[in-house]
Image 1: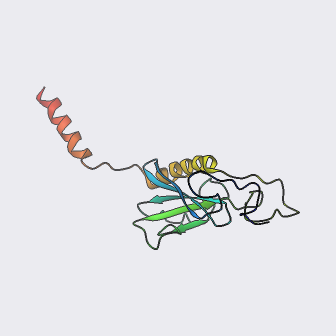
Image 2: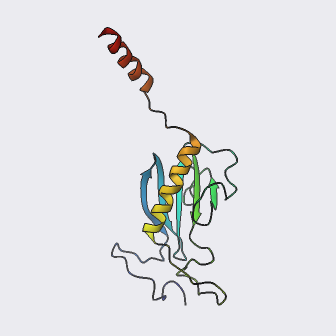
Length: 155
């Protein structure tokens, strides 16, 4: 049985079925761009883009996220280049239901990781990446601080 005939695959009303490969969501969490992409087998992957790489953090175990970080590159897999760095994870591990694959006889009970699940995992990963990157710098913050200090001194 493939993802196209699997009874767990449902029509989504946005003009595609769950097994179509495409970007499902893009949003910002902890100041970082997040994306959810559905693979051809129907499982979901989550990606967080950062402005720069975090040295030594591509070993898959540096961040607490479903299955560990499984993508660490200068771009998302659906793009040829990026403006920073990209960390991602997939929901196609043992115990994850993958609509386009038959269940393995020896596999434990499988659960499908949906968009809500991946969104929560992305928010958690983005928070960890933001902490690893350090505080977000705001342009003009020093100038505003100096203007406030000058105003206080005049008073």
